[in-house]
Each structure stands twice: as C-alpha cells, then as structure tokens.
View 1 (cartoon, rainbow, N blue to C red):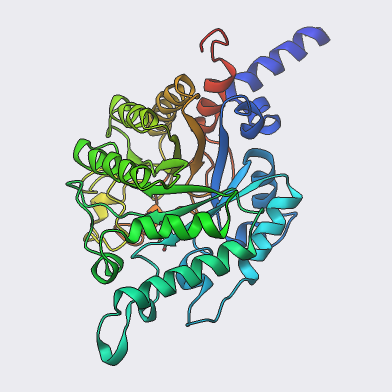
View 2: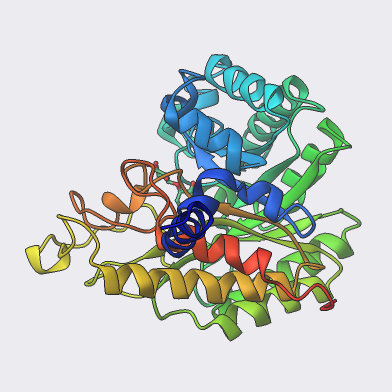
Length: 377
Ligand code: XIL
C-alpha cells in the first residue's frame, strides 16, 4: 500500500480505538474553558513522582482532593497533636504541577476520632467545649494551608434523607447552629478560601430541599457559602440526568456555584438504592453481586461510557453554574467501591482501568468536551 494510504489507515484505526486521544489528550486541558476536572488521590498515587499514577494525575487533573488525609482522624488523631506530613506532601505535589487542592473535610460525623465527641467523665461534651474544639481544629488547619488550598468542604453530610438535620454528635452538643459556627470559623481562619457544603443524594427532592434551606439559613445569617458539592455517587440508571440537572439549577438559583465532588458510576448489581454513600453502610456479600471480577465486558464498558457522556453533556450545558467535576479515585483499582457497601468486590466505576489504561468512558468524557458545539452558551 502506498505510504500515505498506509499512514491514513493507521491513523483511522488509532482514532477508532481512541488510542491517539487517550495517549495525547488531557482532560484538564479539554475542560479548561468550562470547569476544573479533579480526582481524589491517595499518598500512594504520587509517592513516586515518576510513577504511572503520578503521570496520569499530572496529565489529566487540575484539582486534587485527598481521599482521606485531610479528614479529622488523619490530621488530629489525638487532642492537640496535629499530623501534617502527608497533607504537606500533597500540597507540595499539587503546587509543582500547577494544580489546586480541595480540603475534605472539616466538620463531619465520619472519620472523626472518638475523643472529639467525648466530654468529662464519659459524658458528651457541652456546647462550649465542642465549639472550642471545632474552632481550634479549623484555625490550625486553615492557618497552615492558607493560600494553598482552593476551598474547604466545611461541613459534610449534615442532612437526613428527608431533608432534616442529621442527629450527629456535633448537633447534639452544639445545636443546629453548629453549621453556621463552622462556616463562621472557617471564613475567619482563611478569608480567601472558598467554603462549601458537601453531601450525597442531593438529587433526591426531599434531601435537595433540605440543602436549599441550609444554604438559605447560612445566607440569612450573613455567612458566605461559595458552592454546594453534589457528591455524585451514581448508578448506571439512577439518578436520572434530569434529577441531577434540577439540583444543579436549584442550588445555582441561590447564588452559589455547584461542584460534582466525588463522581463514580457503580456498575455492580445488588446495591440497594443509588447514591447512598453513608460510609457505615454494609450489605451482605453474594457472588451474584460480583459478576465482573475478571473484567468488564464490552457492552458494559459501552453502557458506562454512554452514562458518563450523558452526565458530561449535561455538565457542559450548565458550565456557567459548575466550577468543578471530581472523580472519586484515579483508577478502578483505587476505587472505594471495591469495598463499599460490600467488601471484596471488583468494581469498574472510573475512567481508567486497573492498569491505568483509558477506558471507553474516558474517551466519552473527552469527546463530550471536544465535540461540544461552541455556539452553545
Ligand atoms: C471514603 C473513602 O473513599 C474511603 O477510602 C474511606 O475509607 C471512607 O471514606 N463520602 C465522603 C467521602 O464524603 O469522604 C467518603 O470517602 C465517601 C463518601
């Protein structure tokens, strides 16, 4: 075959397999006109800056959320003993790579050591004691990373499914205004940082209404909240794109921006109810609920890619409202969904497989940005 023809044929086959764009393209560049693209990362992903994981992070992700190391139990495991080494390392790595860091998370009932919620003589702490602990933690952590963390998930998962406030040790000791106090302390500690409320299943109408009231409450108290984080732990069919789009619009109407903060698409059967990311949830193991231990079959890869394409087309339509979309993990091997809510499964929820190879879902997300009609608003 003449050389030009051979070259064209090779190019066409590469284009079909997506290999050209997967190897040379960058998600963070493709989405640069629209919103930040992020990933949740762990220390192991970038301990060696020349590793394949680190290369993937640098190429595709403009903003990094530590999956665990900025949680209370990691930062202040014992009263007054702060452990900053791992977080310092992440901030340095992000800085070398012109990336941002998101602080996840300050005030949450999860992954917070028992001492925080203990008072004198085995009693719960009183309001003043718990407020003092909250303020001290926020001041110390935000003080250290002032100017180097883009924004903080100030309060995480404060709502029940019916939209009422969750009965957490924070609320029991302090009262409903623990949320206002957290935002007040965070704003004072780092006036330039963005401050967020973050939760799962905010697409569901009752819970979404609860979040809308929460944002209004903060605003009525004169406190600035910059964005609401919709975690975005979704399934292959639920929630509908329309439900999430409605939530994005509802929050934006309040004058705040919206972020998708922990996106993954659970492809496994058996999980009850979409999006319930309560980390204490456990479901019984059953081999029938782990059908893709040997790999995800092509039709499922395509279904996953189509699902990601649907979400990202919707995000692009709403790019004036959205500041960031973050994937909850770098590759399928890293995903928390291998262990949640049923331990020991093999899930495939992200854009890169266990060998860091781009999946059809990666190509779908990339194509969504590259084929977007630029004449759209
Ligand atoms: C998860 C992490 O992915 C796991 O590694 C950890 O064991 C438990 O927490 N909502 C959140 C995240 O806000 O912090 C949770 O992350 C997932 C649900």
